[in-house]
Length: 265
Image (cartoon, rainbow, N blue to C red; front, side, top):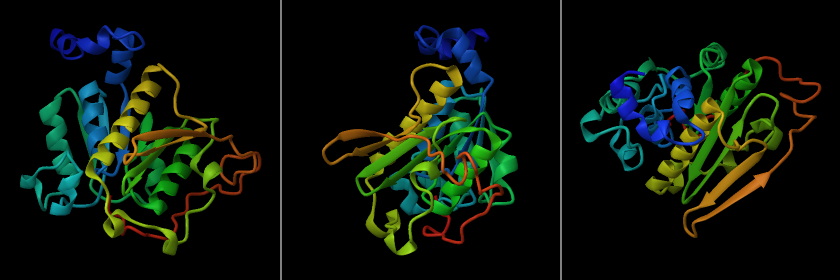
């Protein structure tokens, strides 16, 4: 680290559990964020501030005025722009140390596996069940760690997977029926919930990269902002899981036709 970096990351350098070695790991790390929306926005900003060396941002959407209530990486001046371009501008303004790699298209069954292989940690910043399962399946197959997140109304939830621990399918083997899904565009969402969930996801990524603390593996963390209550629900890896179990039957990447949110993050 040069002198400017030592000043920038001073609070990490003096922090037990991070220190100079941990900061070097962050500077040399690569994190992929799928979805530059409500969750991806705060997550990207805090990972950039932390000095993650390379941030991949994957999103095929453009900035709309309804995004600005919660997607804090974008500005009013960014309306109509590609979200990956808006995100790159904000990240570069915050920390020029960070290299941004943009993927201005939605991930698909044809692209997701090769994409996650390039990164150390993956953030699910989507509100789309089809893409969540793509991320889960690709990361498990590639042996990559990731953190899932989801928000709706006043509630949020996250879980983390590292190789050998329970995956998303261990808890939810298949996506819900489309008729059972309430999307943010249908029922609304408190904007600050995205900040809570996204920063928790950034924290999990930092912990995983630096090797500090206990990750949120084999557990689902939920929170309800109306009563400010957090609950951690432990669950075990399912030996019968069709993806990561003892006798997996899911061996190729297949995207569900189910698209409840029209792929908008």
